[in-house]
Image 1: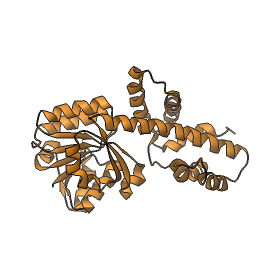
Image 2: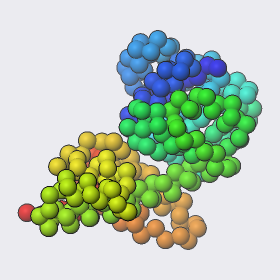
Image 3: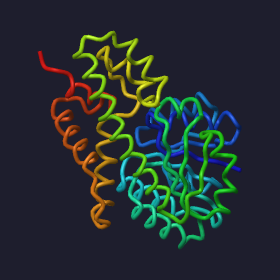
Length: 286
C-alpha cells in the first residue's frame, strides 16, 4: 500500500513521520516546498512537486491542511489523476458540508473519501496517540486502518460522510469551555496568592482534573504560551462551529464568548500562541 501525505504543518509533519515509521509512506507534498524537501530527504521518500503527480502514484492520500477552501482545492487537484478505488483521508478540521462536497468530487472518480479530523494536539501527533473521528465508508476505513493506526490510538467510525467533522466540532466547543474554566479558575487562585504549582497538582488529582490543566496549567501560570494548538486555529474552528450551530437553533454561549476573546487576543498579536493564552485576559491587570 503506497501512501502519500499532503500538508506538513505542525501536525502533519509528525503524522507523516509516524506513517514512515511503519514503512508505508511513499511520498510527500507541501505548499512550502522546503519543508517537503527536508522531510523527504530525512525519510527517504519522494518529494512531489505537484499534487496531481502524487495522487496518480498512491493507493492512499492523507491530507492535513488549514481551511475549507484549501481542502477543496487539494481534493480537486487529486481528482484529476486519482486511481479508482483509492482512498483519500482528510485529517483537517473543516465543516461537514465541505467533507460531503469533497466526497462527491472523488466519488465521480470512483475513489473514496473519509473525513477523519483528529484531537490530541502537537503532542499527540508527535507521539502517535491522536484520537481520530471518522465519517464515510466503513469498508474504506478498514482498508486504511493500518495507516491510521500509525498516527492514532483511538480510531472511531462515527457514521456517514461529515459525521467525523461534526464530532470534531463538538470536541472544539468542549475545548473552548474547558479553556474558559481552567484559565478563570487559575486566575482566581493566583489572585488569592496561592502557590500555583501545588494548586494545580492537587486539583489535577480530583474531580476537576483534565488534560488541559495537566498539560497547560503550569506553563500558562508561569507566562509561557508556546503553541500546542494555536489560538488562531481554534478561532477558525469555532467559527465553523458557529456556522454549523446556527441552522439547528442550538445556543453556543461559551463558543461565542471564546470567539470574542480570541478576536481580542489576535488583535493584540497573540494569535500564534497556544490557546492557553486566554489566561492573559483572566489575570488581574496591574
